[in-house]
Length: 430
Image (cartoon, rainbow, N blue to C red):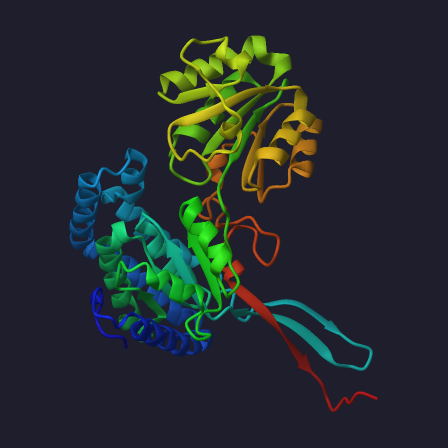
């Protein structure tokens, strides 16, 4: 068991404390790797119950974080990401229960074959080990990351945003209660107990080999730093420059519904649409209704000359706008010459995160889905479905846009690797 959370700011003991956290996590990971599925699920169910019973304490801690952020002049989108309410706390608890109901990936045999010499070879899922998660603002990530790591047999070291430290502490207190009730080590889910930015650097160094993987969740600056400095593998996306392309065969009513949701449901999430591309062939019928709908939402629209001509409220787009992740009620709009031009624009300016096409043309949809090189591509659906819960993963630890190991929502299956088990009866190699 680990000691209760305490602040170590200003004590000069940060390096020693971080090494202790790493050692405790490594020991906990060995226990979790062998823990029965039922024991892990009991812990998760107890965590969900604790989140609900400790909701007043969680909301009180969050209110302090929000008040401090507001007094510091934080942006509206930032405050939205930071804020918890009854519904978001309940969603957190319900998400934990969904994870508890998922099939345990650990020990699953994904492939098996027999060699001519009679040996049987199995490929088996095993945990990654210790996962370090570095994130900003959203305190619900504390729960999502911790429980996904637990379900997949991994220990988690969480370094949340400085602005959400009180909220994350309250959430980890509830998670620790679930671990205790199930007889699992509290060091399975640890929160770095300081706002000191040097803690991030120590985690990126791997804590003397304790951390196996780093997952950053936050703004471009954080992710870029992690990718540049990490001495261990990273699952990450640098930014979510997501597009919706409205094809000439798109139903206008459907396009309006999808575009409004993709941009405005939650503007601060990585799956929010940042650029709207409209086929020039339907500019006369589709562009003005889409732009006016966004402006009235209200959403700031920055457009090319064609887009500016349909409404005087549209601001001129700069070259930088086509590759900007706003994470706010702002969108860039441009006319393109069909699906090939849309694909070329996405390839040039996109971030390989999530991109959607709205069309009733099956051939155009197939071409878009095949040729757009993004982790998630959608046909006639909102980009806001870029979420592990919506994929049926229960939750996600992040969205990965790289091509190695994990891509798209990183859920419990993606938090495992594999080993080979070989069964023989005396075979030797000639």
